[in-house]
Length: 144
Ligand SMILES: [Zn+2]
Picture 1 (tube, helix red, strand yellow):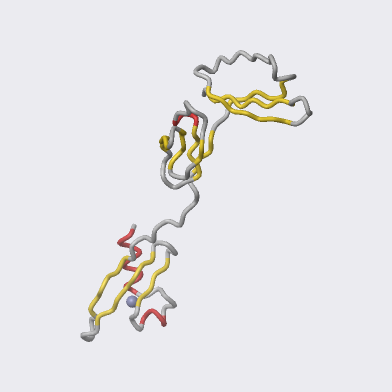
Picture 2 (picture 1 turned 30 degrees about the vertical axis):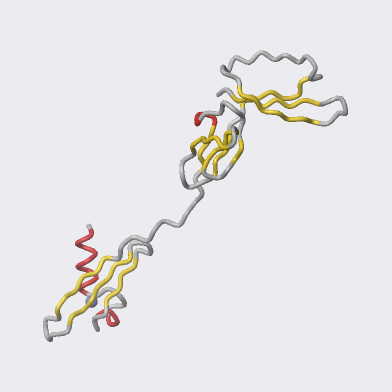
């Protein structure tokens, strides 16, 4: 936790914030030349990306990658909070079962959509049973 965020009022009364790396969390404040201290706190960078952060140097400057967030020299991954953006979960695979009709050569396809937790069957019984034909019942039981 060694990045210190230091905010103080400059001589014009404007709030200035600077961040710098400090090798230990035991930070002794030296207000010399900074005026009255307003805020001293540990700083964590927020890394909003689906990929985990890494720190890379380009032209001598450290950046959190991916994303090109410039950071204070000396920043380590311990100073970075990884915030994963919410992404749509990749669609689960649809379960599909084919059943031959007992009375004819017709093959019925019964499907289960895990994302919406819905069943579908193209047999005539589906309509009669309002989506609760024997194939769907069978599939429900198999899932248990
Ligand atoms: Zn069916």
